[in-house]
Length: 85
Image (tube, rainbow, N blue to C red; front, side):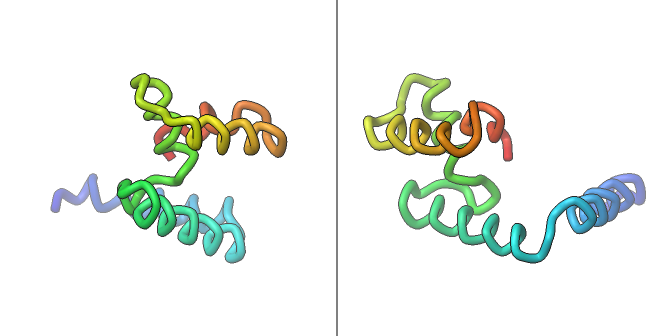
């Protein structure tokens, strides 16, 4: 692995550790776990990011849309903001 790539990965790790609490990181892992279990999604993607991508591609189900609607009550445009997370 290239030294520059390693440096970028270490910086990303350190930034994640600074900006996210232990509890938030646990919630993120659980979110990613359920993305794999319920949507057969990537282990590196949250449910809301996965659903947002499905909505963008016109493949969202009524359940996907309902989940985003519920998340919108907590955080406006949550699914759109989480795209790529």
